[in-house]
Length: 195
Image 1 (cartoon, rainbow, N blue to C red):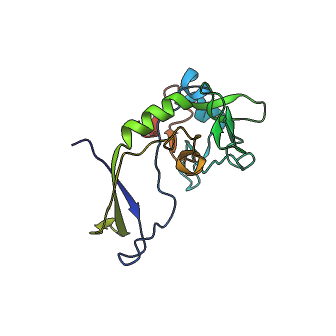
Image 2 (image 1 turned 90 degrees about the vertical axis):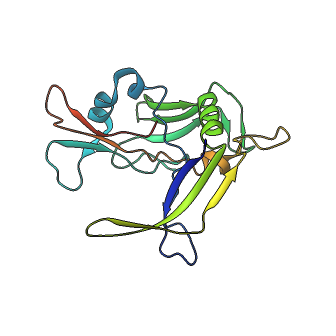
Image 3 (image 1 turned 120 degrees about the vertical axis):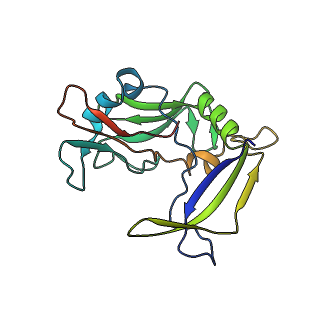
């Protein structure tokens, strides 16, 4: 009991190499416009028309890393407020991961304290299961070799600094969300980041 189960896509059950980034953490933002005004206001400001052509639908997604400039679809960039990349340490625990627009408005943010608590709680025991998907219709197969991870910690042992490789380097914004009936007075969410 208490194990988080995560699947990740692979090309085969021989090498078990992940096809892409494995999402480690997707909590909803704890600050910024997303938190203050809601997902609909966030999507209306930073979302983009559905790329598959679904009418009256606005989406938000993409990969945001601290080393990239503004995202072409959303106009947002990720910054680490209170983190010194040169030393790999948090310099201000009241800072966090921030998505900013070109006017320096905080679109969404995740405070370091909350991230660390969430990370340590959710990933204290995790099992990673490889999967293959084929379609149509969608069918999944799961590999017999899994990775069991226990005792994870955002902070390295012996009081070392915050490790960018542990969370910040791998932790790009990966939760996607969208709304349908975007022009209505009461748009309907179609998905949201995991809590």
